Image (cartoon, rainbow, N blue to C red; front, side):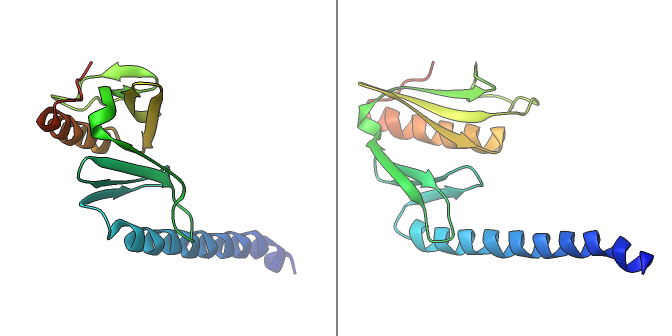
Length: 143
């Protein structure tokens, strides 16, 4: 009986892990359907991001598809910064080794938009790409 009680928490852990995997799988499948409409897209646990031409759309991933979707045009971007733990980091060069909260910050005419990322290198590559797109359309500058 004691052995059964010792294995019960492990069984609970396996059930929780199976549910978490199933949940994440369905989020990724819903993302794939959503991302098919974009030229470039990214998925991570914090946010989904899609680019179609000069329009960026982002939201929070769920099993039913992204929610809280917001969009803006790259033509409206005044500046673009990469933030790691709230501090600005260069988009060019070697990605910083520090980790923590990573955001791409877009300054628009009336507001500031922060899109979260899980990895500094991923945010950096998106920032470089969007900076080039903004330079082509004559809008975004990097601080």
